[in-house]
Length: 272
Length: 279
Image (cartoon, rainbow over all chains, first blue to last red; front, side, top):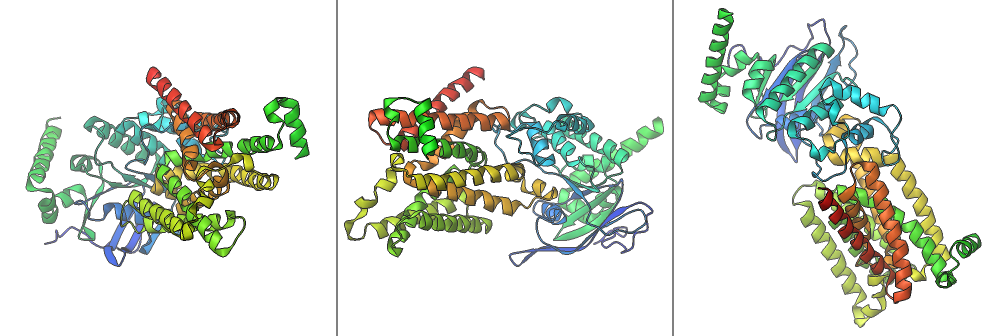
């Protein structure tokens, strides 16, 4: 049963006056097996779209297809304010984790310098790179981490460093793959707050694969529920979280709690 | 070469440096050890120790193929086979059917077995056992020329591709989002490894060549805090061990390659203690 307000396929034209990113009719096949089909998503500037869904539903695959890492059918469109310019959007990507063991002698500065310059970092660092890296790190409150080794960072610190890296230069589209584990609740909340502030100040379009439904409910503008190889339901958090399939997937418990929270919040707002 | 000989006579006026073979070997060590130090950093970072080991082993089949084809200098057949096995491993790895360890293990043992089978026909394996240990003192001026060319090429490639390679090794999707062609660099790097292992195998020996790639970097890792220190220490340890190993092997009458490896192991123990002390 589909919720009446859920829009599975978006209208093909962009009605907004701002820029937007459109994912049109994406499909992914791997070794002959269909992993994603008919995925349509429409993201406005300044919007945070959260992707939720059960494990193995294809959330990460969708991100990788948008990145161009795995081949896909359909198209990715970026339209500027005048609805023109279908160039490939520049994409910033925050991965779940880095493939490196904790003893690796790679410092935060090394990571940034490797991404920004062609001068081999084992030879020397370019003069201005340190200032630039400090400036980027300041955006995510991580400027004190510059000389630390990546392996020394806590999960939350690493995420902020990776976010700072993805935002330099400021991309059209920001893809966030939230770690399943390794970050405490407080760190996660801090991360969401930072993202929320940055999105307003840079007018970023954000796609976030998330596992924390409470935070999604609080921070996302729109939620896309990925299940059975496609986006089954898409809309505001309220719409999606009252959808029968979503409730069934994540359990009734959670959805009840969410509704109770909402009621509390409304009640509190009333009192204020 | 004359220039080099007179330079050595001037700087190192010792009795053991009088011989031309020692001067050749000295130049060989100075060319080969920095490359090992450099490449080793990335091999250890990417956990490819086992892979470099299998490259060394696959050289045995390369030699065997050279023998069948009647090639005098087996370098080309070794190189051909190493590159072939490298590409085969990467290709099978992408199919994602088994863990990388398993795949490398399968290829490595197959290569060794095939090499032994071919070379041991008519019980003649002893002829080739020199390759197992290697002989640095037999290096000739024409070998040194090849080594010099490879030295320059490796340094050039390392300058051009290191940053992109590092990013790819940390997270492929992240590298991809920054427009880096991950596969290209992966293949380039592994082929580079195959080349350097191949051309130095006759002097260092099949059995220990991968230790020479890995131990300097592993020791450096114990004390380095960033990529620059990592490279500097790794190259320094490789070069110092190379020189000390060459001289000691002369006096002890031992195989040079193995002596060098033993000294790098000493460095590993030393840096490990330093690491424990400093926390």
